Length: 439
Image (cartoon, rainbow, N blue to C red):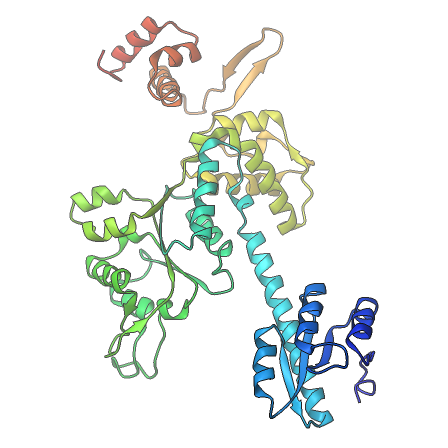
């Protein structure tokens, strides 16, 4: 029957013969009797699974021997067929198992792609600052931290961090659902989060599941939680404490097994002081906190990020840019990147669309970026800064350079002066002159 159904079939009359044929034939499915002349079928099942964990094993057992069927399933059997049986039933069980296996493979492939898409390489870099972020992502993913808070300016990659935590954890096969607390009106936010019962309000013609219910087993990502209204903050606090919620119009509590990740670009402590954010919620969220550095604070990562974005954009648009000129890299490293990594990617994407050669040149980057680029006079071996079209105040340039030097060395004046090629006394004089510090 199986041969007629276009399956390739091998048979064995004993456990020893089955093991030999298994290694040579490499089957996708094994029909295995519980009782064999020289072996126990359940023990043989373990041998098959050890040799190939993906093989489907269907146990054949008498209906009266329910205990054997239960033992087989606990030992890893994919299904069992009771005696007496008919051939059509066997064919149907095999087809169902193979379809299930194919669906699982597709799902695994999808999740591998998801992991690849949101892998750590999306947070590329080797700087100490970004490596600390990598370590925290790993800790949060492996420990199944139930509450994670992500702080960082706009464009630093808070969503990428949240997705990396989810897709590198045991929850990766379950949903990841995000909601921007600043983008949804207050009167709709509760409905989006917790859902509603049929008839809860005029237009509620059917029951609606909110994100906390839809994400069961997975992750809920609340972006820009600093913009959440105080009334909703109280409801989120209650959920965190009880892990339960009620739909709008509902009378029963619904338990939700989800990881909660929140993110904000605001200073929550300051919002607490201004009575714009609940202090009790702030302390409940402040369990595992990941702080994402500004791009200007990890400039050594810019060359790596640039090549990463070039590769990704090549794949996306079918372009063939091979690299970036040293002059352009120097320009990118000198710019202060107020829009952080997002702004860098956008700048590279724009430049790649305009570039006709295989190497990105400085001419295709925006004026605000190229104004930070140096021009090198090789004969005199001196560096000059390009004057912006609208001119610039020398005092402002000096103040900015002094501030950057002090920031780089955490306020150490001796090191900052050395970096600026001036004496410490000169630096102190200029600090006083510009009103930058009390001497």
